[in-house]
Image (cartoon, rainbow, N blue to C red; front, side, top):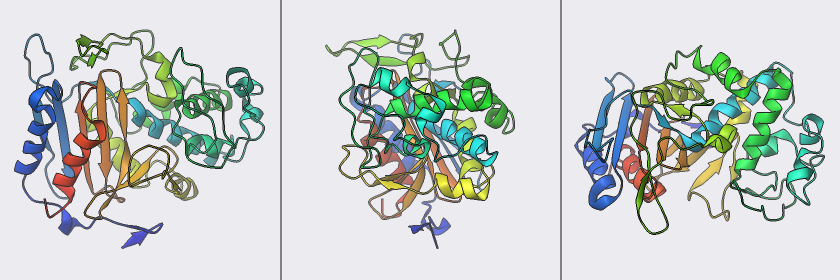
Length: 342
């Protein structure tokens, strides 16, 4: 079966048993690949399965466990995109509105050479705005022509967050809570405020400096990531959110079609074999199976949440360190589970 030209994952492709997945978890942290990793699997008609390897705390040796809060990084974009699309369904904004309509002068102020009158909201969400990526303290490179190609940029989603606040009259954190977290009973999912340390229970978050030294960054202020990557969640909450999103329970049909209409990421030096929608992306595995969802890489934390297009079979994983091969690690996990030949 196909939808929007993408082959859906058949239930017959799901590999029975979890031994292979557990071995992939062990590989992820072997040889200092990371402190610890968790993974939660859910499939139609099957009880959830939770697996771990490594530790939550490098000092105490405490193991990782269900219910931990962790930073989800760029998977925040799926929440931000959902809120924008809900506002579009309510006609409080249009995806064809220019950025300048909502944020006059903002793009030009911070990105020399950019023109907010030529960038539309849809281009922010699918990363075709031409705006460059930027981290705090960095001078952004010159922008490109809007609509020309995919350029993955946190700037796009932080602008989208500002537009949400203008269109709704509320904070982004409150809109995510009101529209998504509370209706889906996502008790562990939120945008941190003044307190950046994740709520209890949580795994410690670790990073490596340029000299290879490991540092605990659990308490780091990552508020700069905001609408592009600032949220906290749990494996079970991300399952519930992704299942609702894939299953069409968060968006009206027109906006659902918009979210899953994709652009090519080829040539962008990004994730191989992917196409990007409006906050989510598809990834084709080596066996031809296509999964949908997203990943998140942020200081001290790496996460991935993907499933088949219907949301019948999904996997959510988090590693509480940021020096592993991000896409290699998670591709290994997903191919172990979803590719029948492995």
